[in-house]
Length: 238
Image (cartoon, one colour):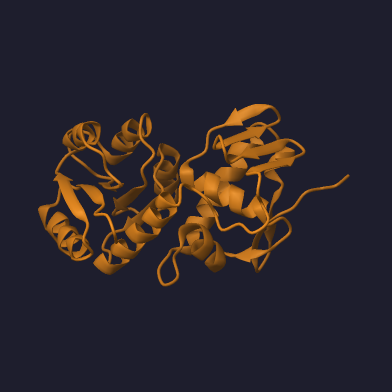
């Protein structure tokens, strides 16, 4: 990479911090570290980071609270580490603003690949792989996605989405009626080719539908499930 990028690791277990630092420094990342939530938030306020690796279970301030505080002012990718794999924990992390998660015990190589994938998306300024969309504004009945303003409007209401929820919605809407399986969505939106929990896609789809559905059930139904295959974005022309 041309310019060294800086990552903050907020993790209370020294062994895990050392392991992550060793693997990430091999890839030429600059690393800062904090062993509790309060110190982690303070470092984010004092420095500029390209990405944050955040443990869910932290002393003084838990990972969910830290994530929410970071998201009040900052948009850098957040990769959450958790020993919990239940869907409710993943949803809570995504709602707080996390872009992805890794369940302990994990492979350090997997973490490095996920970090690189998140940074590629971030460095691309949120632009998805598009061939025919030039004005960056997608307009459907009940739904408007303005990429220039990074805004989603449903039935006239602004909807707050996490960065990854936004990218997933924009990608699907940019490829209307095209069916994508979960592996393809991981590759296109998360840029994972060798690693990736397929449930990550399902969780994001569920949250997207819930958020869109609060303003318009019609908008939520545009994200359609193709049973046995995956998902697509479809619009009723009637």
